[in-house]
Amino acid sequence: MAATTSQASLLLQKQLRDLAKHPVDGFSAGLVDDINVFEWQVTIIGPPDTLYDGGYFNAIMSFPQNYPNSPPSVRFTSEMWHPNVYPDGRVCISILHPPGEDPNGYELASERWTPVHTVESIVLSIISMLSSPNDESPANIEAAKEWREKREDFKKKVRRIVRKSQEML
Image (cartoon, rainbow, N blue to C red; front, side, top):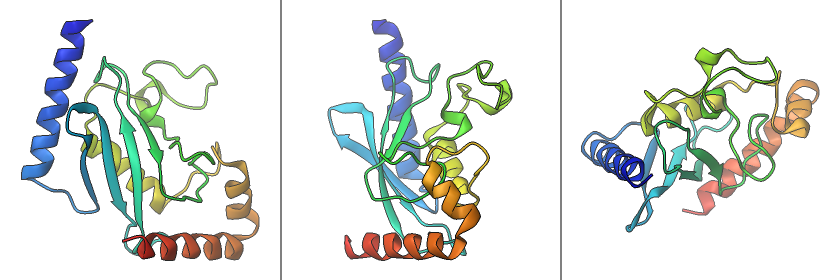
């Protein structure tokens, strides 16, 4: 286990250095605490031309000791109203689900976690999720229902969250 932890730690340190050298539009990332490379603070900027445009959304990315063989978990610490984000902030997208076959049969194994994913690919997938919610298998049933049936109410709620995120700067 120590060798796996050491490899995961080295890989995460490399990914952090790469992001520092070559920042990616739409997000920033760093360690929550300089001594723990397994907990990252990520700020996602709401994608242009979406309901989340202009918002600043903070999240914690927690990596398992056997990363990259298992996916991290991502939880928004900023308020978020989205069909694919649980009410407690946990992000629900296919690439964050454990590798292999989906026991519920909703996802192909190829859509789930694989060790080739990086922090960058994960965050870009979350940005894509913000751009186009999947209400077919929602994590937040109420948000999905509002997205489908009361789109104007959904938009109003998201605009309020975006404004609130801007005030927190």
